[in-house]
Length: 134
Image 1 (cartoon, rainbow, N blue to C red):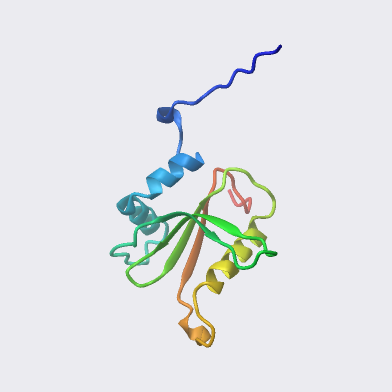
Image 2: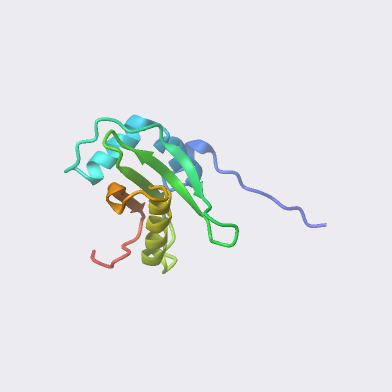
């Protein structure tokens, strides 16, 4: 019988692109806030609510759900979804569109005016150049 050998990477060697490590790092609200401030320097983010790791949005049993890596709100009720994407699956623009619609769907209640939709940012961090712009 052939023996199966499993290699386990020590946590000290995991990079930020590892799903577990990314979630652990982004749970530190000050690190998460600083990252958002670097990516969006024009915003003045005083604080963020405790980051919610891997938030799931499931609207209907027959609809595709989404699992957001990091979902946070700031002091101005602006929502940020931060995703670590290590593979170019070729569908990221449409996936981004779907994520935006799912987040918006949970943002206002029936009967509320669309003007109640606040700003939303979906940020994909990846080791590849999605738009091939160098």
